[in-house]
Amino acid sequence: MKTLLIPFICLAIVQPAYAADSAVSPQTLAEQGLKAGARFPGLADICNLSQALTLPGGAPASAGGNEQKPPAWREASTVMEPQKVFDNLYFLGTRGVTSWAITTSKGIILIDALDNDEEARQYIEGGLKKLGLDPNDIRYLIITHAHGDHYGGQQFLVDTYKPKVVMSEEDWKELEKPELEFSNPDWGLPPKRDVSIKDGDTIKLGDTVVQLYVTPGHTPGTVSLIFPVMDGIDRHVVGLWGGTGMRFGPDEQRIRNYSVSAGRFHDIAEQQSVDVFLSNHPARDGALEAIAKLKDRSPGEPHPFVTGTAALGAFELLRDCSLAQAERIKLGN
Image (cartoon, rainbow, N blue to C red; front, side, top):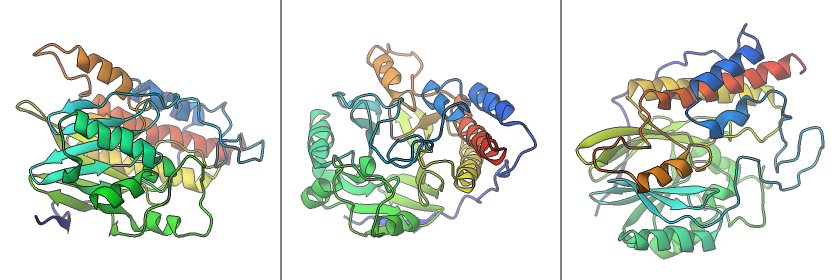
């Protein structure tokens, strides 16, 4: 069985519609972002200009510590049943963090590995089996960014199923530093260097192509993805934002980079007709509520994950509200 990692050459990389500067007030930018992303209330705290930005680990910037403290949006990691979301996309994870499984004609592409090996065993391996899928079909593990709640379960998956582990070059380098930006005793070991991708690369497996874009900000090499999903005869396109929060303190330039990345990815997503917004935290992208609705969906009813052009509003919120935060820092507020 042969799999290919190939450069994506059919899509011209567009320039961001928003430059990382603005004459608009931070409050106006935040209000614009909230309005655009109203469909996704789990993102709203990014627009809160009265809330202190936090240092790595979760302590407020004014507190000067690195204590581990979960952000308000992340609910306790309680059990979630695995769920078929589209004909070729499956939710595996907890109420706190998501692993997505894309099924193809040649195997499974897994996106993220949860916090640790035990979660990977319980929720990824166990979840696939509950859904009637074979974990032995996992061919790729794409890690969206270099934080342990997304790579922590990789060792179990690599030892057991031997997938190729994919990250951006920038985040491979992050994990090779002597000291990591974020650490937590509940997280598993970082992966060993494997497949390194650059902006605009794709993974092609069987009948499916996943587009990969490097969207720096959350980490230097956060990867965001675009890929097709099917709902019966209806085709939709997912835009998955790889790193949502800004829990690295009041770093103005880094937050501006985040805004530019979100603006650029918005434009790419618009060009690709993205109509489904996803992230890797189910409280962020509305997956918790959408899964509940999906279980009660009657034939012919709209798919609760498909939001049409409102999906693009999530990227507008990320773009505008991060820029508002950068402008707030610039003004000394």
